[in-house]
Image 1 (cartoon, rainbow, N blue to C red):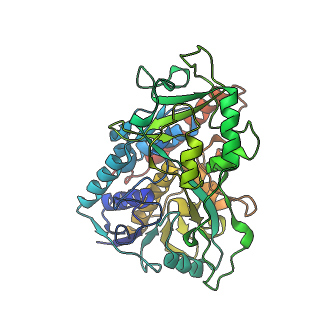
Image 2: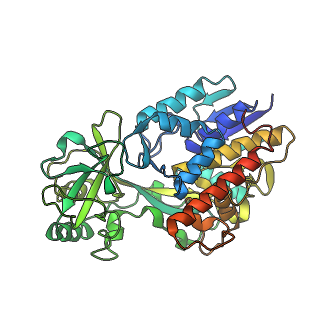
Image 3: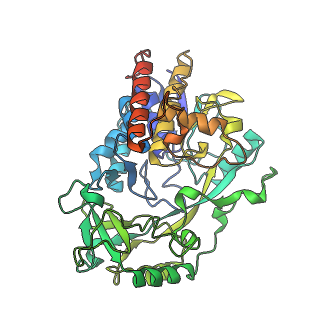
Length: 454
């Protein structure tokens, strides 16, 4: 039986292990936690979510919803377990992060072809392997990757949002609702903290002047490797900006961004608020709520002071404060094929955030393909290149063909897909056409593969 080594037990590594094991490979999955923890994780579970608990939209005419449907049709384990662990979140798929991670861990521990090794990997494995070490790849492995590629890493700074204890939210001010009434629960899936104009600007002014945490050593690029790293490459990822950074772009930036009040009416006034902070359920018990869009690097004391200016959070108790961490990834356009193989070594695959994909579902998707392709290579079959009409195929084409000047983490979006044969002006109709074409292309592709559903 061929052995596959997988480095990293996050979303991508876990999905890759399952896909390869289901196709007959003996998998050794290395995860250094809990023997060696990262600055962002808190448990030893596989597939632990450290940022939001939301996997994004379920809607089939949205890019994220299309990618989920593609994964569903390709037999993703993690998507199935996420749906089993879901908590109310309107049209989004959000999970109880502990229940989800426990389910993934149990599934992999119980698979006869998977051995989980709790040990840090400090060098690139020989033989068939998948590197899925994630955005917090350890310094030792980062150095090994730099030596392997002969090129620099790129570094972005990513951030996570605070979590609030439900009992500390003032429901005399806050109200339950989903935008435009779209949700699973009749009373609404989100808790909304409404702001009038004066409250909003007071909050923004306090936010932009609040003190931030200085980056720790682990947040900085690894420079003592003998490999040159350009100093100008460290910057924020636009898709996950700290809220205080976004606020500095203009006093109304938040009102048109994460605090936009569209589709919501404050029952106390019967009118739309000037701005709204939304809280999304974070666990099945409903005792914890995530502050939507509130990734931050403020000092903990400043988070308490500033976020308690939000109406309804005057006495908020924080179960977790927001933090910033380094997001490490390769320059994939020069290093990887769309099969996720390393160009200089065909038996080495990469998956997850280290490839330059962004978002939980993108990580799962790359893990699925890397595990499947590793199995195909071991069995003497050609690794798969998915049709570019599919969302996953288009995403992989982007990360392996993008320009060095504008390459940054990318999540699923319709702009990655090839143009439709005819122009459709209506945005939603155009999205439905993209989705329909993608799923037809995927179904036709899968029908040609005997190992599509092991």
